[in-house]
Image (cartoon, rainbow, N blue to C red):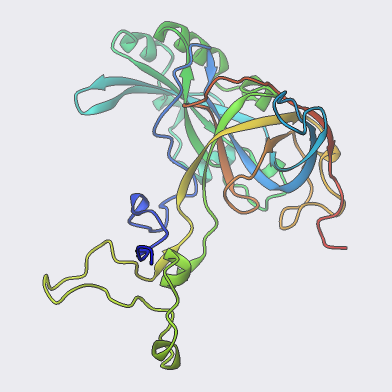
Length: 334
């Protein structure tokens, strides 16, 4: 007989405590070490999924040169507006905000999200030059424009995005150039690029131990008593407390997750060419530009997803495969 398998849970404890995310906008805690001047992330909205046929370009693959079925995710990319600039100083306790400057003309819908400063209270660009010697990071405060999409909302999401570059002066010059302007997805990313996706996952509510942690369903006497889907033992008599490692029921889903090394297959400006017949389920038609990402992306339809330059990308050996076909057939099931 072999050794008995010990499997107290199937989920990782690294994500504990598994509680609901505080905000729908994901936090970006790390950035790529890129010397290219420009924004290092871009917020988009998830429209839905479909499938594509790619020409396999791996010479060692048995399918080399043939069409390969691949699931893809379509993300709508309405232009974002650069509303402000913020400078940070590196201290022993982390980054400290030095100053910030806002654009002269701001979208009125931004007032639904933030308390906007009065015109006479706004700082000018001279405030940035006064502290630029102390600064170590330059970030742009951008907001989305959901009213241009099919999502029934006017309140924009505000995201702080790091500006890449070889020097602080170079980053600040670019930040002043884009302040108050709108940027498209093509100004940040291009087809074939490797990116990371950050988003809040689909919420599942309060779930039991079997679904939440994948523990074994008990049979026999426990099943006859109607308690087959519970944790068999939650701990010893002493210590007289339940350890945090015990797989217990609770919140499942609606957590922030990051998925690494996704490839952009296609960028487009006409949403009608990618919208399936009848529109995407729970989303509708894509009205702005779009980006097609290979594979799946976390979160439900209409969820905000932040595309970030890859922080751990390996060498790209094969490059962008040829996209032979992207399905636009109805997703309604008819």
